[in-house]
Image (cartoon, rainbow, N blue to C red; front, top):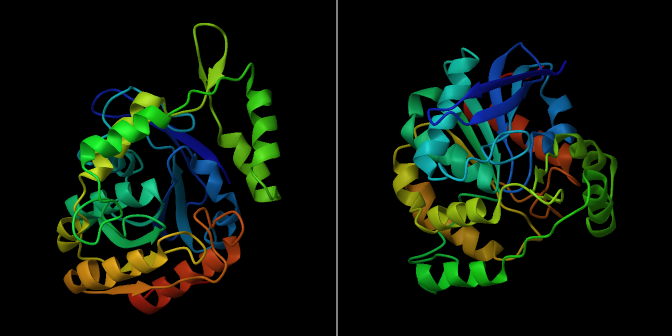
Length: 291
């Protein structure tokens, strides 16, 4: 089952998503920056028998519009509320990857009554700045460095972009292949295509992420939380220390699991292990009995 849906946000941005099953408690999957809802194609089959599975293209991603604004996390969280309202869902389990974790955590902090559980895979587990944060430079220095290094790569067609992906995104596999159906490039006035979101929107997201103080967000969260830092991604020790010292003390129920061999986008090469970790967490910490 794949039932597409769409809705308009408060600033009239068109957001697209898909319903993959319609039974059980709702579970919403949120992708990483530059990704789209189809990245979860390897994980979804593990959940469709027991959950009402929903995937969403966050604003500026996939088939959703990039309005060039609204990338603060209060607005992004409101986008999620409107998705749930559109689908007549009172509360949902949330699963995020990287940027999707930040959006999910912002939502869970602002709307705890609508969040059943939170799973953060490689995101929202360490501040960018401040004590224990990832970076030592000021926000101005950080953003200046990003802006200087940003490149706008253009492609003559969607097919040319996909060919580039297949050359560079190795090792290629069927899950990556199936994620291609969610790609939607932005057409430029000269007839070329660029990736979404735009560089300007990407910089807005990075600027807002730099200002996040996760401990303040997690203080507002009442549901169980699972942290899934990648084993082979850089900075693991810093993430683990921040979670244990800054985040877990303010949570009533949380768990950390490091799946061996995982990298940042673990849904592509450890889809079964990722699914199993979420299902086990739901059984142990949320009290769900899976089919």
